[in-house]
Image 1 (spheres, one colour):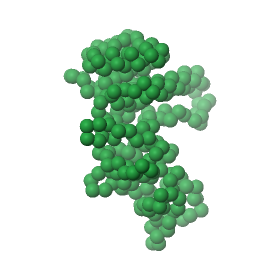
Image 2 (tube, helix red, strand yellow):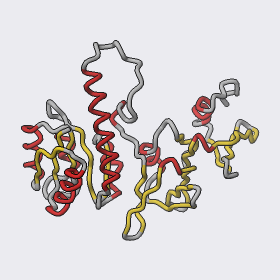
Image 3 (cartoon, one colour):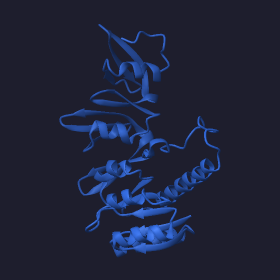
Image 4 (cartoon, helix red, strand yellow):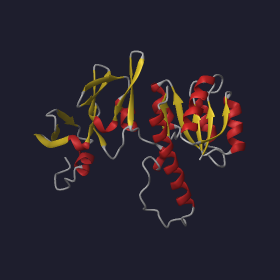
Length: 261
């Protein structure tokens, strides 16, 4: 797998190259200037671009959009020190989002994901059109949105990570969205809509305008009368279910025998 690094910070590029070298990964080039990086991507045709977001004149998000127009569009992993760009990054079809300073194990996991994505591309390219239309896709392959496996949370001057599998539910309160795990609550700057797009849709469901829940944490579905419902989680927390979102919850719980309203 051929990797290109685009980052205006020399120390950041050096750190990434050392990590990639330690992982026996081929680095075909580095670019300090975003425009030079785009030209290098067009000529060298990397499989993966490690791309900073905050750069002078041209942002990483703009570069990512331009990369998608190349005949051989590379995979893109953003490498940045700012978690607030996560949603915008995934909207640009980013494969992953790494926060600086990048940890070796996190980079190794991201590279493994890239290899899997590239293998899927080759397999699809070698499959006759329509032959495998119903075959399962890798997470994030359909629609280009790659869900996070760890959610970055801004906390004062640090970035803390919450494993997605540890999230029980998230709810909007007092103009902030609070994410609840077994270890406690985490106040975030995300919106409920942003979390809905970032969290894996096969494991989480928005059941109300104000909250998202992990399907595996639902213990009971409660009828409150007058076609109103709520859910009780394993932790004992009770959450509301809006009428508009009840049919999808019912479907996801396999309760097709219940009335829709």
